Length: 428
Image (cartoon, rainbow, N blue to C red; front, side):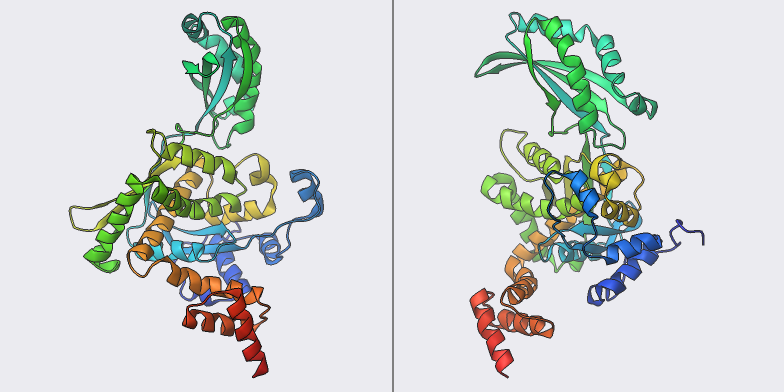
């Protein structure tokens, strides 16, 4: 088999994966994705960011913060088995995706996207005739396209560039503002730099056409022209019966109606989404901002997911949210860990990456709601968290499992209790 060609008939169902050592898991993933030896060696180094690269990524570098990368198994997205690299420090996040995907692996997740369109805003103030100014800008559509597309001929050559022009007159605390939206196809880039450059270039023209002063000229992270969607069905008998199904639907109903619940509900979704976004070198803050703004687009903050009972009596779940991720530019292109994670995912377009991330968000949410509707969120989460508490108490090697087991049995997952248990073990 030629290097770079993934093996045929591969499956993300890997028995005992969670029980394997980190190196054993890495070897399994390398075989699944046909990783180059250099990528395998890199991932095997847990402090794997070169100082000179780190120093160019951000300012005032003194070191790096390593976040564990786990692999979510069992995922099938649009009929294709995939392994999902997830960078997170929180226990139970990876396991939640594995469990949700295992319970619907036969059918998996079906996804779609609305495209790769990003919005840049140019704000004009002090305009004496804002409504007429709006029309004057719209009359310059061809000129706007020419100015902006000239900023990035490579993007245009790849099939991207300006796609639409919108102008709004907003009544604000400071008076009427004329806000121009550039709608740009950024292809496989997240696109922040491209659209910001276009907005900067257009700003003096907007000032001339409106007679006003231009201040802000920057992208919007409410990327509602770049939506990713995923849906899935969980068979009622596979998830514990009608009572569990109905409990999940009821939990969703509360999140839909109550922003206090919706905030935590959506945070759980972002546990999964952010982990993949971070692993692939994309901008977690941009994705968070867009998701939460989209959740409040009706004027009331609500759930990013929906659940309902299908005609067959099974549980149907769906998610829709902005997903401005890219494969080129920034850390995505230059960070070796991000490049290895993209290789594991097997994605070649930003759209495919967005689809997979949406499916992960839905899987994460399903597991959280199922736990809430049955045993409660603490049972599984605390069983994993107990190991962290044991290490905080000073446990080493086999002591970690021993201390964690006692904490779970006593239902007292606290550092002070862990310290006492550790002392008992060492005395014995």
